[in-house]
Image (cartoon, rainbow, N blue to C red; front, side, top):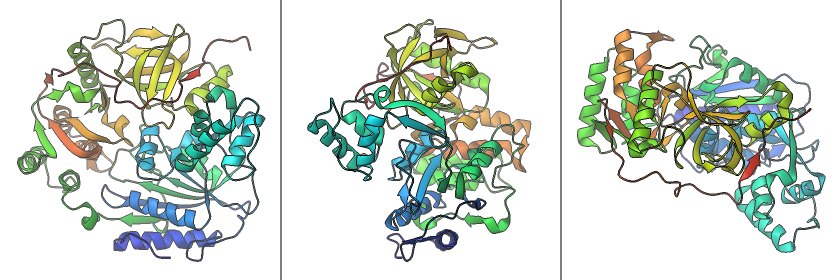
Length: 510
């Protein structure tokens, strides 16, 4: 097989190792030959690890292309056709919608881990359309849908490969064709997992149960999941199961943000020296800024990254005050972070419905306005393929020095949200933004405390994660000040969906 890109030595070796592993399970990339998967084998696991700029995403993308060319079908969380004995499949996963959208923006059809763990149940009539779009059946005749509507669905699917999106293009709502969600029962074949540093042990075990071949891609310099003793799931794997990538200078040259991130690996580098390095870089390159204040205009779509919760809450209130937001309601355009689903266990189906639409813990959301029913909010889920929903919401605004938050909107139960104008660096993992503001006084506080995580000063891990969230521009904020906005909040920049999906989360008698 000939690769269109020129790999580094590390990448070429990793590609060959993965190719060898896939050949051992009946997927020959070089000859484009597939043999049926053997049932009952234990899971084969391999880890590809490297810091930012080492080419993990490029390698994942090229492996996906090679598998597609070999005839392996990509499985998303949207729909799965009838199982065939000779069928070989690949699922590409990320822990969050935002992380999955980063891959999708690079042409890799990624979905969230949750969307693979739980699968949609389709209405039998509309399942005929899904089978046809997936190439497993003839074009159906569906009562109430015209030929033109089916043609719109087909045209959409050819460019987007999303069954729900195609059905929406035909004029259908999610509640028309998806009747519920169920825990996956059938195992899957090959799985790629990006941002594996965010996985906890339970998720890793679930994935090994589902996939017979699992390859995880992670950054060992990031922050380990909370309550996991500073360890990542690949730390305890045998060295023979780890493929180490180093920085690819050819592909990441002239990138001052990556230069700063990699400088943190110098054991002798102190906080003051590092901040001076940022100042020196800022004088030479406009992609790095030594900012004297937080810019409120950026906070609506790119949260300020902080270490301490007290800082986060203080900045959120400063943001709301700068925009003149009333204390008892939200303005359209205010950012939110999903804090989980507040539903009793008996409402499992409703919980799955909310989560499957992207309202999982940590999801970034923008408030669009109140819904048509009391307690409902219209929302835009950042990074979701079908981003607009109307959901029963419990929106909490935390108060400085107060244990209990203020709740301007509260359904009896549903999706819970915190304000998202500022987030902790831990919660920012897996996300990227064009421009990132890092609140440096918090990192200075971490440096002064002298805390260590997994053998490295905590401030360095925090700085590394925060810096590498920036795709094109890094603002290192050195003073505790907030700049006034230059224009009011707006939602004009957000892509609308065909029709908002209404996600019910009301009490029932069952």
